[in-house]
Image (tube, rainbow, N blue to C red):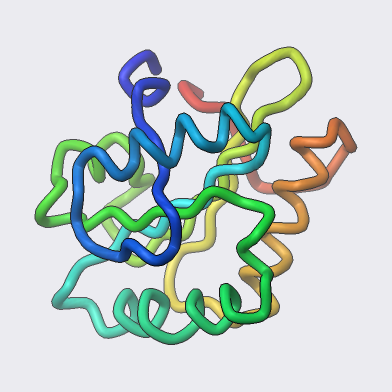
Length: 144
């Protein structure tokens, strides 16, 4: 999906809707050779707000997000981008994109409110994929 390759990620400190934030984060993930973690949610969604305001900041404060490029995407304010990222209509979706050896991006996601442990597991698998290790996931490559 060519349009997806133009998008980027932004640091966790910026948790506001900004169409260019995804693009910056994506470029950062590519340049630093690390996974891209994207939270797609909505302001009206309680689970999305819990992920955005509690779960992910708690992980960030412990350093668990230091190995990924992270960005949030507001499904309402950034509907076109969200439409490219979402699989189904449910939010929140926490999506990890990992670049495999050979250049293909692999995707894995958690849909719904996730625990710290579930997010840590997602990040751990994304890092292993990025490092070329075989990992059992429910993932697919971008464009599949």
